Image 1 (cartoon, helix red, strand yellow):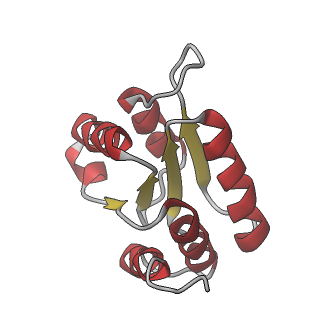
Image 2 (cartoon, rainbow, N blue to C red):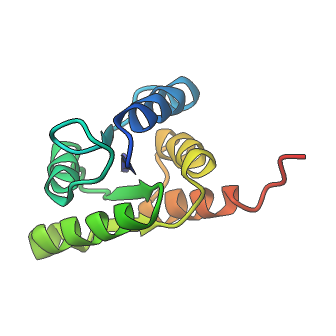
Length: 129
């Protein structure tokens, strides 16, 4: 099953979204990473890398990020991973909440990494109103 890593500047946002995804998708490989080690707002590339390693699956891992520097932290985390692992990790530019829920549901159905990412990306095109 594809794993998900949720990267936010806020620990509370990351963990709250993880709770929401689990309500919708059930228990899937999912780790929330948010804030800095000392509790401030921010992101930490080494924490993102550790999260990827924690939920690593042969099917791969999808990373969803909230804002600009979380993308930079995710990109740096990929550079820190061994090449064979980094090749099975994708970054996703989908809206954080909608994309995470769509990705979680697709992952729970056993879809491939490419299918999970496509579902997350498509979630951003669905009108709310």
